[in-house]
Length: 410
Image (cartoon, rainbow, N blue to C red; front, side, top):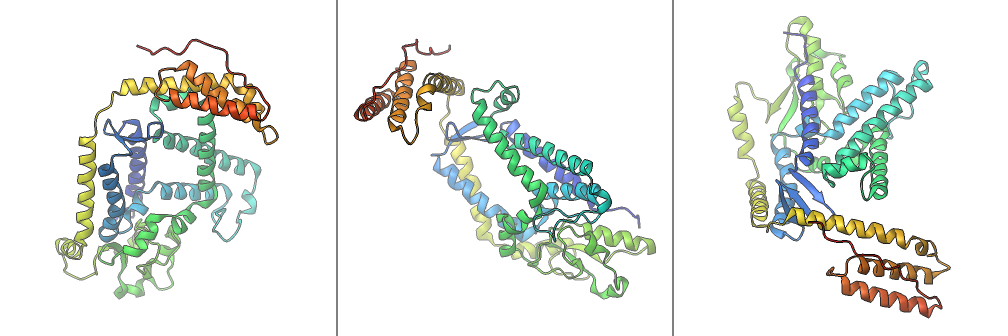
């Protein structure tokens, strides 16, 4: 038997491919959430949030797809594809490399554990810089699920119209990801992940799981090698259905490496259903599907059908016209915010009239810049109402100077 891991590098490759796919989904326009227009962009089509067939179908798929995986492939998503697990493993490995083999800085650990010989400023600096760099890149990936690649590039080159707002959102995203990588890690999986909660509710022994050959227990007397290799810190030789096993296969590789010295197979392996000698994989799969909840499967297919129906029946939108309209809204907001900034500075708890003046100024400016807008009547009412309130408080309203309105671009 070869003394090489069977699952470790395959799992790492799968995790990296999954992370790459998550990056490509918004970059290629396969799925994106457009907050400005309250819609989803999927497969090049715009689907409004008011498209109830699509929304109901999406909810059904999101609720049933995890249950199907719990009942068939177990926790393979957690161990082989989840980006949170990939980042946690990377952060743990880098922490131990820089701060010691037993180093632990997690929020749910046994406390701050750092090797005395590694407790140096340079090591902490390298660790923090690495976490920050990863957080900054991942925050951009998260941005791409809400902004087009062009918007993200404009933000990076300081050419975005909403540069300040985007910068605040970006820094907040970086902060959250940094805290997650630096100290939260598996704590999020154990106590805050809805997927893990559902797994504990719906997981079945017929699903894929790690089994232990108890008939050869004498081969591993006083051996704890598999447990020290376990990512989640459980005992692989006695896994309960409610344990946090993520089917990563690290314990199997560890046991196989140890027994390779004596040219024997390890005592751990992946199994579907109960371990029975002479049972073929076809019979095992048949057993899994015989106990499958077909109501869940039917709801999943119904959700897929409703999503497809919602996409097909969604009325098409002139994307160029919509983009020009959004750009116009942004330009009007930029101009009016600049013109009314002095009045906005006077708005405070002691000068409520200043708040009314600033509000009237923005509405009047918007009306001047875009008099044919469908909101023109609302803007006129806004000017009248806020002007009246300001005058009632003994303050005159200074409206913005007249400037030519923004013309439609061809």
